[in-house]
Length: 364
Image (cartoon, rainbow, N blue to C red):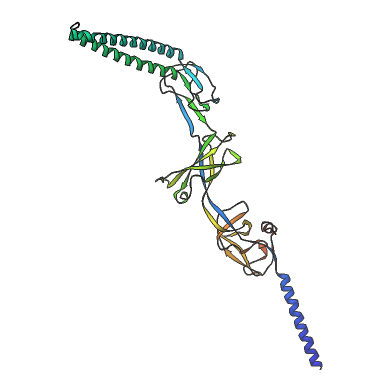
């Protein structure tokens, strides 16, 4: 009996010890926070250095020679389409036009008179009132009169064009920039007078590697940051994708149209653009804090049941700050650690709870 009682007491003690050990083992399981990899369609973006240019920028050059007599707009001022910019000896060209018009009227009168004389001489030729030689002379005179008339009309047209060009007009609405002349300067035909620029709509020009440009299409959106305007984000719409690959750089030229009504951007500015080249469908997205880096390796602690394992991963794009796509190593629905890394190693049993941010995103 004493031996039986002792055996029962020993067995009870053993069971109690096992229970106590199990409780201690559970108590030792470190507490960690987890998040579940969720599925998203995420665009793959490529960063590229870009520049801004104005598609509406033109050099204004003199079409006539002469002295600059007047400036209608100051450098940097706005000017309307067909608005006067400056004048080049307008009075002289107007006088030349008046002289050409007077000479044209004389030529018209001479041609009309010679034509009338020839018409009246035709019946006389039939009756012998005028000889064939005299009649031929009249026809020759009419031909010369007609040539003089054509020449006078051409001279009038040239004089009229010069008279118009003496007033230099803006080819389109914009700003008059980089003026090269002042009142009193003598200019020759072709001399540069200044530049007209309209910066309300600009073009963002960038070059993508041929391996990345194949999926870019007109109508795609391009986000970019201008170096000189660091506190603003801008967007443009692709309207041109070059069909040619540059043989030297192996890149493709992309152009996007950018609205610039506020005038924050200027032609010639540099920018950094992000271009979406393709879409990752049903990609696994996790908080970026889940990714650990060590000796060139990128890994996460993935949890199955109550045990974590260290898994090497391949990273994709960031759909937003704080999140990242994992293209290999983690699948949609997998659970990864986001806090408590210092407590675990490969194979550690853990006591996990959903991270507050992850619970919010899951609607919990």
